[in-house]
Picture 1 (cartoon, rainbow, N blue to C red):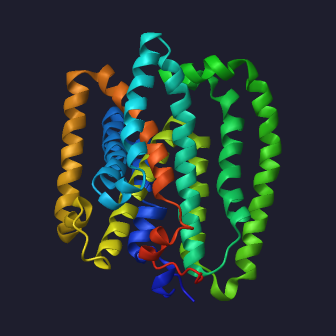
Picture 2 (cartoon, one colour; picture 1 turned 45 degrees about the vertical axis):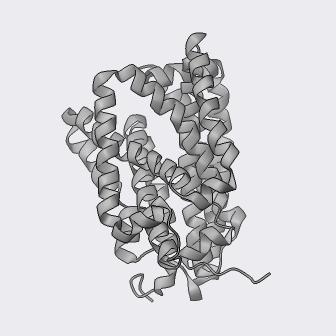
Length: 335
């Protein structure tokens, strides 16, 4: 059975969308970074626009969806206030670098978690796949890279404020991280073998969308071996386009089945491409204005608000919950 001939229920949307936006959409950015090195700044700006748009999608889903907002009304009101207080407090005591040091690994963890979540969506749609194996293969290779590259890329990290902030906390333990990476390499190989065996065992119903996706994630991790900076940029772009595509697919499916909703998000889905485009243009415009008016203040906003994005996503996207899975045509056992 060819990948294209797989049942449509195996794909999140369809073969073209899944392969381009979920699995391999990051490749053009990687090639641009390798071929057009002299235009690094412009490419980074392009990636940042997608990154900012995807983060604000989360806020639109929380504050533009009455049903979601009412679930955690106090939390969604209080958390932004806490974020402002913490950010301003760390600025006041000159410890904003601590927030930056925390945000970088959290960004990476958040992005890897999304990769794992999408893997699990493919598994649930195909009707097979062990949680421990799929979490293991997605996380173990990244942990290996995180530990293995820290000491080798010390000079690269030292060139950037975020990198210097991280080194100020772990710089004395880099050799220990390198040693630990050998252990994680063994663990990653184990999970890879387990994953291959799982797919072989289920070859009668194998999910090519999932297999392609996991392969794409492992290839994406390998970009970090080429360059830590290029890897970080490409990884961020992959995360952003994946998220933007997923949210559009999800809300479109959800509100086609739920015609009576009058939330802002529901109304936007009636002319989804128009409103999605306008939303993206508005966010990009605000970000460009923010960077031009005061780059430092804009950086503070992005770092501070990123934590809200991380936390809110943890609330929103739990595939085990029917309200998340059903719009994606995931079947759940009846209570």
